[in-house]
Image 1 (cartoon, rainbow, N blue to C red):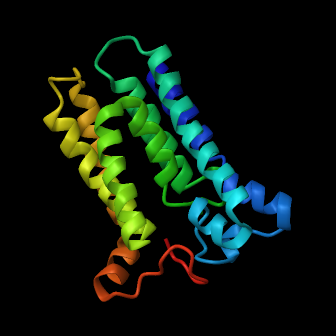
Image 2: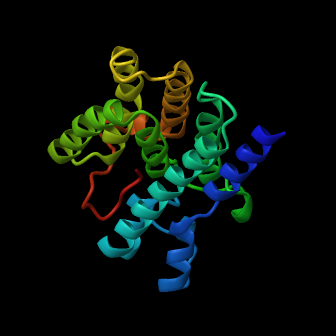
Length: 205
C-alpha cells in the first residue's frame, strides 16, 4: 500500500506542467498550441524565450528530484524499488499529466532530475557527452537521446564502483526505451536531415 502511495505522489507531482503554467501566466496561451506543441523547456525557449525556458527546465528537474527523495524517505528496504518507481511515475506524469488532459512533454528534464538523483556519476558522464553533442550539432533531441542511451550503459559499467542497485539500472533502461519512443518523430527527422536545430525559428524537439 505504501508503495502505491509513493507511486501516486510521484505521478501527481510529475503531472504539474510548469511549461503550461508559465506560458499561461506570461502570454495567456496554451504552450501545446504553439511551436512544436510540446509542453517542455525547448518549446518554451522558442515560444517564450530563454528566461522562462530556464525556469521550466529547472522546475521540471526539481520535481523529478523531489519524487525520488519521497521514495527514498519512505522506502522500507534498500532494494531501490520505492525511489525508482516514484521517479518513473514522475516521468510518466510529466508525459501524460492528469491535470491537462494527459497531454504533456517528452520528460527529458524530469528524467534528468530522476536519473541524476539515482545514478549521479553515470548520468553526469552521459550528460557531458549529450551537452557536447548539442553544442556541436545544435540538435537538442540528439542530446536527449544520447543521455537516455548512455546513462544505463554507464550505470551498468559502474555498478560495482558506485554500489548502484540493480533496480536503478532497470529503471534507466526503461526510461531510455520510453525516451526513444517519445522522440520517435525526432529520430525520423534526424535520419532524414530535417530535424530543427536549437535557435531556429521552427523547432520540434
